[in-house]
Length: 400
Image 1 (cartoon, rainbow, N blue to C red):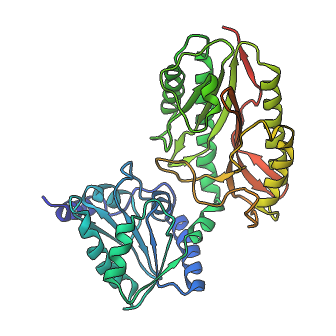
Image 2: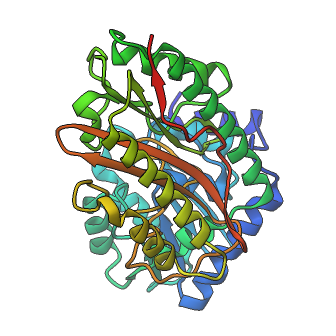
Image 3: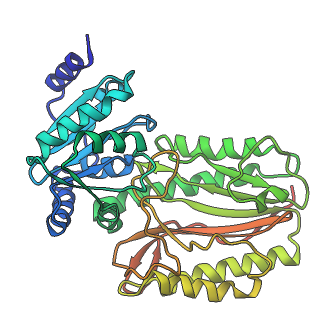
């Protein structure tokens, strides 16, 4: 059978989608997005990021390399997917219509999607909101749409969905708490195998196995384990290196529950930690505490970042730090667990609100020597940031 027949048979077998949340929750999210669209005079919102599609419709897949598009109009939602995604689109999505296109003919996407845009927007000259910075929105598709829809106006409106997703509902907080517990179990399991002579793969395997066994879904980012001098290089990972005495072992995990992830970093030392490693650890904790205290509802992202900068000052000339004191987390898909672009950084004067959720990735790296990282996933309250993750912040010294 072709994909159209496949879709029809699935729809007859599964007339109601299997959802992570109650329908009212999805309706409230769409209402918030549509309110923003109306204020901006948009006829249509065009979304492509997997996390955004999941947030608004429930659509979930591990195949994030193909071009999927959600069209949101004032009274209609349409999910446009390749043939191989018809299954999860029908089974897991709360939308008015699922439209497929031939997977093997990506060049056909533009004309077919343009036709669907015309039907959904309901006007020959629609104002279409989209994010030009979305990594999932292929430049070729945008070019094709502009060629096909010469009367349309494309408007950069990528922050709309980011802002809506930032504030978490009680139901979202439940999944984040469950994810945090699974992440913590993974870090605990990884710590039990850290010793001199163990290969970094084994540490990652222990953590991953524990998280999967505890109920994690496929993870949006694989467990990160680096040792020795490699721990001082950002975004490296386990690669068959043996742990030596005196090595720092850096771990960062993020389990997934219903696509919600609550990451955590921890660091151990095989043997006795040097005075400088201990100093870096102390500054890590000071930065975490400063950011958490300053990140209050009603204060700015920038003010929390400036508090972190002040705490970092004693070692700022010796340590590399990314400059981002927190990034949003929530529904996440490979290859990242970052959910949007609203960072806790000194150039972001936006205001924090209650129940926003962030990962605070405080990792300080001395190039060529070591890296020390401790982080928490937190919820913003009127009194400051409250931990969702809850494991020890001590620098463990391992003498096995």
